Amino acid sequence: MSIVTVQLGQCGNQIGQEVFSALCSDIRGTHGLCSEKENESYQDSCKERFFCDEESAVPVARAVLVDMEPKVISQTLSVAARSGHWKYSSHSHFCQKQGSGNNWANGYSVHGPRHKEAIMNLVQKEAEKCDRLGGFFTIMSMAGGTGSGLGAFVTQCLRDAFPTSFILNHVVWPYGTGEVIVQNYNSVLTLSHLYHSSDALLVHENDVIHKICAQLMNIKQISFRDVNQVIAHQLGSVFQPTHTAGGGSGYSRNPLGELMESLVPHPEFRMLGLRNIPQMPESSLPYSTFSWPGLIKHLRQMLIANAQMEEGIDWQVRPPHPSSIPSTNKPLHFNTSIANLVILRGKDVHSVDLGSFQDPSLYTSWLNPQDAFNAWKTPRAFNKYEKSAALVSNSQFLLKPLDSIVGKAWNMFASKAYLHQYAKFGIQEEDFLDCFTTLEQVISSYTNL
Image (cartoon, rainbow, N blue to C red):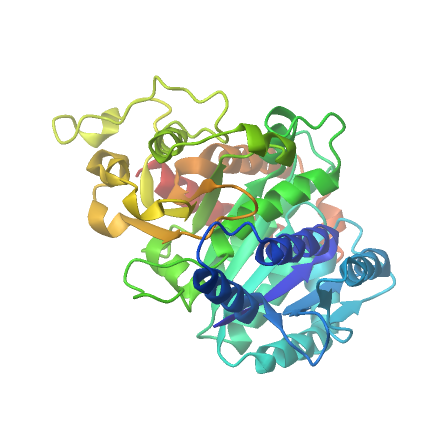
């Protein structure tokens, strides 16, 4: 099944281009460390999922690019074409001359309705090129105006036009110190609207990725491109083909459906976080060796201690003792999960013991740990890593950042700061209050796990 990617705004288009580059360099690599037959079916499966062969020399990304300014889209198209290994279709982008001015309401209430038909036509055309449509993967930031406001609008249109397709929104969480003064407003509006129309939100926090670039990748002057490449690597490690538990011998055909089935057992809980291990500069790979028990031990501790990377994990955090104590006495800092998915790639994956992830004390009491944990595996190595593991988790990962963003937005709202900027595009105080209510409910649900 194929996935149509919708890249929205500057951030969405720049990350999207890095994602397709990462997928392409991975399938072109000869470093698969697996049999030729395995490697071939992996490559075919990836191409069916993310690229279409339009009678052209190179694969064409199944993507629609949307921005309200032309600059980023034309850069994105030309970087892809210059790579010589893949490209975007010349007819699947939409841009205008003036941006959304970092105003969510402008993207959602003005640009969205005005350009709905043109954008949805492009999406429809991409969807029709798929033999079987597996769903949509949108990429956007929450801080600005186009990615967030127009992104929320387009997601609602996708839900209306394709009621039975899966929609996964990849959302980039702004830096805490902030690039945009109204980013907390924009974030609250985006998240609450996506919560109503999306199947799941997969979140990357800029601050976390920045730390990974500094501490694990040893990059001195960190650019947006560095951040985007780490995000693209992590997304690739989830979306490249794998064998799922009940999938027989072939590669999984329905990645979005299987992701939702594994991780979103209840509509109140749609926030997914992603952790990846190991992560290091390519130049260090030849000097590093990893054992599966070591990687799994680190990954599990990253999960329960809510650590964002394998450096500086708090090893003191332990799961609570089962049943003897009521669940209200969970140790501080312990991260409770609803569902977890571990994805293993590389040598000897089939001998790995994942029993530690099936410990009932990791999960909320209303789900059977057998249902709450899933593993996908492939002997095909990813992106030059001999062994690598990714964890996609529906857990309390995002509780703190969500609480903080809602708190900051509420303080601004209470003093009526900047509200007139939104009112002139039709977003009133009641609309804000609805959004706060939605997110307070989400926070409360995750807190009570």
